[in-house]
Each structure stands twice: as structure tokens, then as C-alpha cells.
Length: 81
Image 1: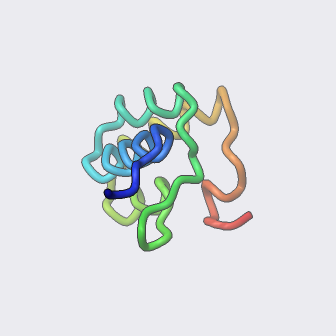
Image 2 (image 1 turned 90 degrees about the vertical axis):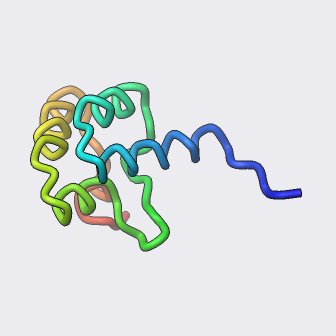
């Protein structure tokens, strides 16, 4: 049998996919629900890294509005602890 994927892992994958697809409203919604902003993909890229690399300005701006309410850990911006 295959390994089960936890609900939180699926939500993190949804966040990363939404960032890649430029779905700013979905990104904002997932973050408001408490999805881990420090999630990373198989290559170690975090949501903001992906948004910048892919030129997803709307996602970056949505993240900025969310920051006014809830500040992410430094790892969200720099990929470290």
C-alpha cells in the first residue's frame, strides 16, 4: 500500500500549486486558513520564491496584504530558520 498523504501536506501542495498558477485569491484564502507559509516543494522552493521566479505579481501582492494581518516567519522570505 502507498503512503497516505496528510491533510496538511495536501493543503501545502495546494498552496504551492496555486502560487505557480498565479491564483492570488486562492493563495490568500489558503493562508487565511492557516496553511503553513513555510511549505516547500521538492526542490526546496517556498511560496514566495516560486511567485518571484514565475513573475506572479498578483500572488506577491496578495501575500503583502496578508502580511498586514499576520506576519510569516523569516523562513517565508529567506528560506531559512
